[in-house]
Structures are given as structure tokens and as C-alpha cells.
Length: 424
Image: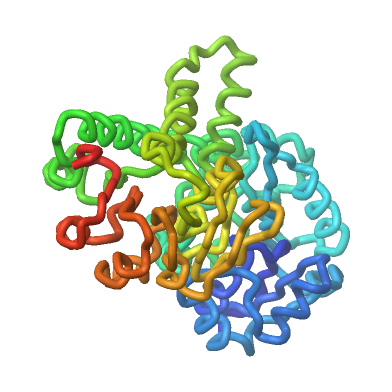
């Protein structure tokens, strides 16, 4: 037991992961959300998020966590994190109203010497604009990696904290919380910390986009991106942890939101943002990779349904924000679609002729083509022979190379993957 009680306000992915990890570190936790339905689920040990290992960690630390929809329960906390989800519009612009509302509710019940820590994704100027000059308001950069969130939260490389005045020491209660994670703590002004979060996502966007451009060139010149990437990982200037997996543009919403934020900041200050606009344009271009293959194959709705595997924007999550699979559905109106995702249940309004299969192989039954849109680990274990026997056609569009390419060729399937020559 640490003697410090920590609150988390907002029970989305960020709040829940942060809370159970803090409990694992020995803190007494109060989890608040003003949606009683979410709280009732959590009290019943039902998780509203999909994250590997989350339910086990929650169960192990349940005795240290109080779930509540009454804001007054935060009154006993020494540190309260605001972890509201930030929604975005179709142009990826942030709607910060939920964060402002939650800060208002939390501030009204906190004890006077408690620390308020904004953990939601906010643009530079947000924390300064709150006008809280009590010396107990901070911004902590969120570094959530969906699908690997517990690992990242439990063992962060560093923690970045924004303060109104970076020369002032952190309060003891907040300092004690940070020390439990046994990693470097970097303190800086609010504006620097808020920009650091955007900077991280800009460098990720750069790596993702460069990878996708080079993978597309590989597709056209009979090179293999997997070979190129293996060489790049051995270069110390790039490294083994670099983002070198070809994909279907940017997804998930967080990077897109921060690119929109940096465009808004830069445009109002005369900054040349052509490189950022190029990243966004390339992301939209790569989203069409699958649809272009479908169109070039001249598939007909009369030849049977299409099998689509994967609706989450990436593996190990239930999030469909900016999901390539969900977006593709809107372009396939004439077709019947057999769809399967291990976690995401398809919604009827996504497609007028959608049928939810109970397994990946069932989705293949009688299909004229198989399309793999999310690289779930279980898809990599699918027997190619079983797929071939169930498909009516022989086209397999597999951007992430989940299926064994040589096995597909042996079973006379036309197998397309990102970063390799098309129509091989």
C-alpha cells in the first residue's frame, strides 16, 4: 500500500488501463464515470474494452479499485487524472467539450490540495487556458498503444509532465505516484508537453507514410518490402523498433487528430505544412489499395458474396475508429458480405447486405474472394487448404500477409499483399 489514493475520471480505454496498472503498482484507486451503465458493467467484472490481459489484471487488483458514478467519491483522492476520450469529426478536428465538462465536475469535488492531472489528448494552450493558477494542475502526456496498452502503461520508457511553471517541484503525492513507475520523469511547461504528444505522432506518421510509399514501389518493381525492412532494422539510425510494417494508411484516430491539430496551429502562424498535408494525402491514397484490387478483378455480385475478415482498425482492439475494414464496406454496396472479427460485432448500418459469420472459415463459404482487413493473430493460423476448399473464387486480398504466400500459390489462390509485386 502506498498511502496515496488516485482517481481516474473517464472510463474509456485510457482511463481503465491507467487505473488497473496503478492498482497493480499498489495504489488505492477510485474510478469515476458519469455513465452508470459503464460503472455497472465494471462492478459486475465485465470489461467494456478489448485489451489483451486487461480482465486478468482487473480481477487481480479488484480489491484496490472502487468504481463509481458519484463524483463525490473522488473527494478522498490525492491525485485525480482526467482521462476523458476526445472525439473527432470527419476532418479529425477535436471536440474538447467532454474534457472541459469532466474537469468542471471533478474540480468541484476535489479536496483543495489534491492534484488534477489532464491525461486526455489536448492541443497546446489547453491547460494554460483553464486558468487554474493553484499550482496543482498538470498535464501528463498519454502514450497509450492500443493492443499493447498494459505493457506500455506498466513499463513506460519515460513520463512527460507539463506544469504551469517548470521550475517548481511537483507536489509530494504526485511525485510519489510517478516514482512507482521507476522511469525517467521529464518536466516542462504545459505548452511543451502538449506539443510533445503531437510531435510523437508526427514522427510516427512520417515513419508509417515513408514505409507505405516504399512498399507501394516494391509492388510495382518486383521488390519485396519484407526484405527491405529487415535490412533497415539493422541500421542504428533507424533501428529494430522502427515502424516498418506496411499498412492501409493511418488508422485509429489519434495520429490523425494530432496532424489536424498541428495543421491548425501552423496555419494560423504562417508555418509551411506541405509535408503534413502530404502525409494525410498519402494515407487517403493507401486506403484505396484494396478497393482498386477488387475493381481490377472485375468481381461481380452475382458470383457470390465477399468474405471480409477484420473490422477493428488494428489487431487486439475493439476500436473501429478510422478502420479500413469498416470504410471498405461503404464502397461495396452491390455485394453481399460475409464478415467476421474476433471482437467487433458488425453494425447493420455499415452495409445493407451484411452477414455476420461465426468463424473466419465460415465467412469463406461460397465467397468469390477473401479480404483480410485486420491482421488478427488467429488469422495467421488459418489453414490455407481449408480456405481454398471453401472459397468459390481464388482471389485473396491480404494486405498484411497473414496467410502464407507459398501455401496460397500451392492451392492456386491469387494472393495479394502489401509491399510485393501485384498479380505475382
